[in-house]
Length: 506
Image 1: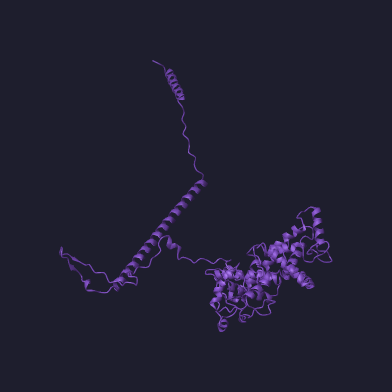
Image 2: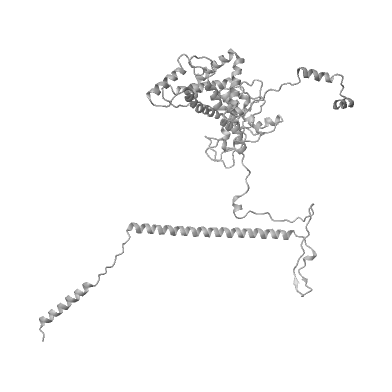
């Protein structure tokens, strides 16, 4: 009988062998799933909630659209029923409208009613009443067909025609001044509102009764565009209806021509007169008749600064190119620019406008003058010089004064040797402008015939860029011996007999 100790050893050995067998088997370990972080979980929840909200909103939109479609169909059906009832009510009664007529074939009853008589038109076709056509689908969304808009520059390049004025037209005064607005209202009160928005329609400068008493056509009011949001502090031409806007731009274009040829810096009264004349001329050229109001007058006058700024921007580049100023920061170029500016404007008086600035010979004949006139007013066929030939032919003395003032100002921007860009404010150049007016008037008084020829040559040279050509004056060709021969042929003729005509044909 085995002892207890041997038994324990055997059991331990079996356990060790079984353990070794277990070690030979592969060990499998289960992978643990990574738990999402709280932040990621919150993001996912928010995204899911947002998707759900979008889905609910889409459902609401679908239900809303279905409801609207249902109501539209019901409304259309009711309208159709009403139109059918109206047609039945208008139909005249007849003997054929009996409840029923025995059917000879089957003894069945029918409710067939005869159609009402219809009237025939002049063409012989029956006049059938139809319900008005209605737009449906995408066509209904477009609404009524809008009339084509008038372009803003529709009247800008129209040939200018003469507008009658007073005999004394030195300052372009009008033959009849419009009456002033009532003293209780400010000049621009009619065109302003308390806050930006749909402003009240501007009032004309004068009431139309004056034109009506004189037997003239009453001008149409210049109204704002429908739906225009008007800022009373910053009105613009686009606030008005299409035709009025085009007239404003045309009048403003002519006002710029007045500034360029009459006086670059007119006083307040003269600016107002020019604006009124430009508006009147624009209506005549466009064959329109719209009333002027204070807002339009102000918009036209604002174009004076625009043409002056355009002239400065254009001539500034010519000054650097023609005279040879260099935009360089080197000491050598800075000194050369400073010296050149002093040569063109010495202390004794400006010589830049002479044909030869060094010798100061041939006043007002430097090539920069003609090139400036061409660049500012004769750029193409739609420029001021081409549209308003009567103002620029020949080149006015005031235009030459204007050009000299701008060139003088542009040279000053190089006085330090470096280009210093500046704005040409009226207060800074009004004195030199007045000085050049005196000099040019004195120059013209020396020999008006010669100066007139120079001005004419400036116009002819500038007009080449625009494509306009001045027609030569008509000349008689029946002169001299040809005139004597024609006179001899007519001697003894009466012109009343047929025999004379036959002899001439033979």
